[in-house]
Image 1 (spheres, rainbow, N blue to C red):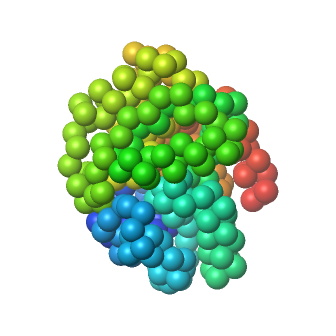
Image 2: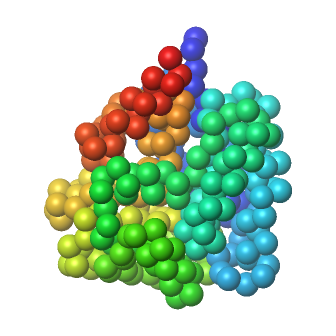
Image 3: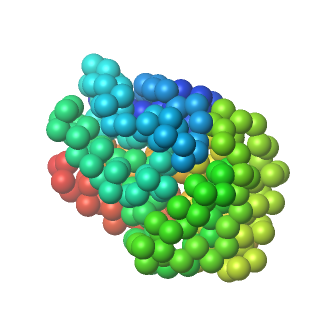
Length: 255
C-alpha cells in the first residue's frame, strides 16, 4: 500500500494538535497518517528560560527520530516564529531538510503562505499569549506588510493551560476581532481548540479564518503531494481557489 507519512514536531505540553490533526486527516486514513515527536515546551513568555526552549538542537533531534519512520514531510507544529521572527522558522526548515533529506514547513510559514496567496494585508489576530508576546507578533506582521487591525489575547503564559479554554471562549474572541472587518482572522496557537469552530464562524462572519493546526495540515499535505482539497468540512482554507495553486505546484514538483 502506498502511504503518505506526515511528521509533526510537537510541544511537550500540547494536548490539542495531535487529536485535531488526526481528526482533520480522518477521511484520508490509512493512506495519509500523522506521526508525532515531542520536545520540551512548558511556558510561553519572553523569559530567557522560555526562549531557550526553542533552540533548534532539540527540534532537530526530534526530526531525526521522526525520520526513523521515513516521513514524507516534517512540520514544526508550533507558532514560536510569530514572536521570535519568521526567519527562525526558515532557518529551522533548511536545517531539518539538510539533516533528514525531507521537505519541511512550520505552522507560521504555512499561515504566512496562506495570507500571501489570498492577498491579506489586514489581519485579525486571536491568541492565548501574554501582552508582550502579542505585541511582538503584531510587530513582526507589520514588518511583513500585514496590519493587525484587531486582536484579542488571553494573557496566559501556558502552555498546557491553552488547551483548557473552550470553543465558546475562542468563538467570542473571533467575533470581537471580526468587528474590525479584517480580510482574514487567524487563531494563532496549536494548543487552542480552534479548528472545529472555523466552518460555522466563516459562514456567520463572511471572513476566512486560518487556524494554526489546520494550516499546518494544509501545507504538509501539499508538500507530500496530497491535494488539500480532499479535506472537507473544516473551513474554506482547504477549498479556496486562491490557495489551490500551491497544491498543484507541489504535485508538479513531485511528479
